Length: 151
Image (cartoon, rainbow, N blue to C red; front, side):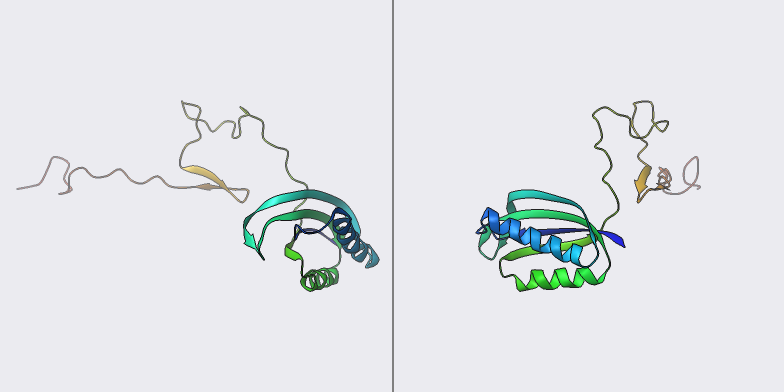
């Protein structure tokens, strides 16, 4: 079994009991297929970034669960058949979210410059440290000689 997260956005015309019925139907589908519900977060009504089917708001819900892959196809089919489902997305869960950073906490100890900044040639990518070579100093003499052009 793998961990999944499914977010779906329902049309704002849904009543509270209809939203709960939709959440319960998806939950029942997951548990009936041998999956396990981990968490359900009801994010409530939120403004959409752009209009979808003449709606400017949507009712957001996040469900975290463990299940086998065939369950995803059935959830997807259910969502596509629902005309008032604005958007949905399922992703593999990468585990719990890291704790939020606190203000003033040093993010990169031991790599500071004199002013307490991280050098501009270092950065993090996907958990791996990458080093960017700084550009060579520009040659101020276009002729290439140290004392100037040879005559």
